[in-house]
Length: 262
Length: 342
Image (cartoon, rainbow over all chains, first blue to last red; front, side, top):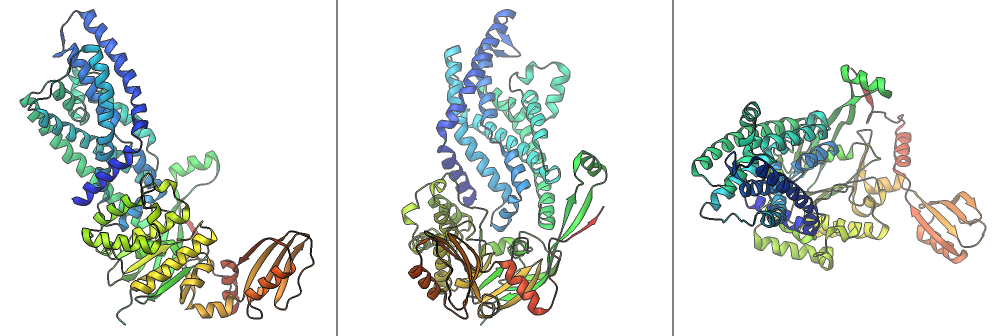
């Protein structure tokens, strides 16, 4: 365990070197936030409703802050693994006394830990300027943090599985493009799943994406113990399913590497 | 003397490689009828390495050196044959073996590019589960031995290739490995950096008795470090002998490439054959059995105004051709040989 904590620590240090670069990139988040702030203001104004799908205008804006923070902070793990598989570099990890998947997870968390506060700060600034509200953290902060952490872990597993497919396809950028878009849309990045029309909502419910994005963001704006426990349950199930898939793919892929050099 | 550190018996490795005919039609055909070809990278090598020995495992590009080292470190499974490193089977006891060996792959850095080497050292100490006090002692000793103290806190991306390689080797030694695998550690280095690395490996072997398995395509690495050398070509061992034998039989000459600052006639020194001559350039072969290289260099420096001088060993291909000639065999055509099948 301590070796993975050290991996996390060194990844944080490595990415802190480029914190200004990350901050600059997060300006894109400011643009997105500003555009959607105006859009939702017009929507709420146009419909004359105070609540949409259980979200007030300020809730909706803070929901966006959290979904954008999660999505924009996720490291490009799939393309990194894809590259390691293509160049054969992944094989060298076998000569070290650690788990490759454990190493990647710790590194993923480390990078996300640097990106998330920066992105959140930018998004929160725009949201505060637009709504003059700020979600006050309370006793439920730990629950929210847990849900976000599990959501990030789901993101990790999704991207890991995508990257590991390169053992068979060599090139995964096409898959990644489609998969990421599907994850964003069906995960509720721009529009809460609660507002999806019936059939689309049904699709979103049976996929893991909303438990990585929509669920943690919804808890962030309005904490509800019942929803929290339900979310944990779904996150747990998908973590087990995707974790097993990643493990099996990795085992089968590394077998190819050790037998045929990649 | 105990059991050998490394025992290799009839180790073979064959890869299956996808084949595709050129052009668009070839790509379409490959989609429906993918053809594969067998590449025999290692074709039954056997040898052993004693504890504390520095073995040079050399050969030209594509000879099977890196594939062999990958099998011995557990990265690749062999197609046939057996190997034991410190009594362990590398591909079955990979994790246990990892704690007892060190690896430096010349073209694959383990240092974190944006951070100082000190950070990677801390990480590796944790990964190899080295107790803190022992790690600090070991690190300080290696920092002093490798003279890397002045740039230990400089980001790796700002280090020269030679400085980086010294850090790479030091990093591989933090957990006190009993066997050190060095795959082309001097590749791309200049003459001085190369010499520094060779000296360090030599000191390490002397001070700690570390067994060193060194692959290189540079004969110079082997000449300065090893008492024994294995030459591989096309995946087969073509020579396994003492360095003195190699030197006596096949390293009997050196090539001097000279660039002159003024026009001058070629020298007439016994044992020196002029291979190429132009107004401001000379290429000579020196028979080191007939005349010492130092004497030839002294003569050159006394007679000519030298703009540049390069002294090289005969290329690996030439040595291998000489070995085949001497043994009366045609040059084997195995390694990298492709046997296609759909």
